Image (tube, rainbow, N blue to C red):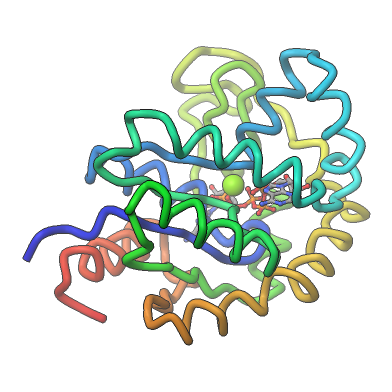
Length: 221
Ligand code: AP5
Ligand code: MG
């Protein structure tokens, strides 16, 4: 069976969406569209758009729907999405999910699979508090589960690793509340659409990826 290539990856903050996305896009040769990464790039560039979204992100609040939908609309219209896409962290609200349905109708690439990475709250806190990221190339590590070769140094570009500004206990609380109230209902939305697949995100990184690949190859649903 042909691989599925029109994909969404969902799950609470720190579930492992970015970690798994990196591997999925490599395996399937499709673009990784992460709204969180796009916002962080805008912040790093110092643009006025970056300044605007930083006000929300650093506190853990969701960026308003109109702004977020617009950047995804622009990104999905680029030619590299002609053979598929992996959306990571979008949609995150019901209005975003409805807008996405319309956008995907326009480009005739309906979602084939919405992967939901299920992880409990204790594991999320452990994963987020131990995450370290490279401010230069964006690579992501964990002090226990995905150690860099040299402590606090990026394997890829040699920069010093940092913690994300929204990985503080205060911001994480706001992010978890936003997830519970605004994002979690999307699980039901995609279940009703018949594309939802639950993935046990409490397993180690390699095992989670194996399960995802089996689903995408149509071997397990
Ligand atoms: P975003 O960047 O999407 O953040 P998030 O959803 O909070 O998720 P994270 O990136 O924190 O976690 P992840 O699931 O990618 O986990 P990771 O793989 O890094 O969004 C950031 C902000 O942008 C939002 O709060 C909001 O303000 C704004 N935003 C973005 N999209 C938006 C939208 N659509 N609408 C409105 N606002 C939006 O893994 C975490 C750690 O765990 C890592 O250290 C990793 O090494 C480790 N790890 C991963 N998997 C495992 C495993 N299986 N076992 C052990 N450790 C693991
Ligand atoms: Mg992420």
